[in-house]
Length: 281
Image (cartoon, rainbow, N blue to C red):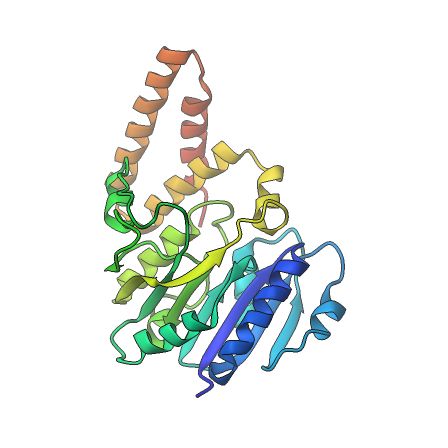
């Protein structure tokens, strides 16, 4: 049954997105439509049109100045009430068996959001420890074990129509280089979604150094931008008391670093990021 709506933002990665689109041929029986939103410097549409793809797709061009979340929202203009929405980064490779496993996991109609696993060295044995409570409760301590979780990767997830609509349907375009996974997962959780991480469904993330949204980091002060979005996330989802607590902790951390190293950037960016976040809506 063709009940999957797929979204793929891409940016200067013709080879990567072409390989991913070819991988999707193995999923053709379930695909209603694929929306490719391109921010590449050169026109890649003719190359995409030449690919032997066995499903319906739409190619959309987007301005390079916009965020990846803006591209995802552009794609959602084409949504036609499919049961499942499947969001993908352009530098993924997906084997045929993964598509079969996705259908198998979703079939009992228990899971609202499915997060496949990313293969990486050491995932079978390594136990991960995190430095914050939020990281600890949301991320897997052991990536080889399935579990319900909070954080949802915006670039690799499958979400049920009803909870996606309940969560607000669109992605928050304020999140640029950090925080969209946290915001997306929090909104889905608040919508009552069962969010399930299943590492047995393994896909490959190529982590391509060129292209993608990494280019956005070249045009901003990365540390300041992250601080601003960190506080914006707390402002959006928690009380003002919690937001202030996080600010005071950031100030204390910045002072410690200043006294230990003489560097003041952490303190300055924390204070400025907090002030900037208060202006965001």
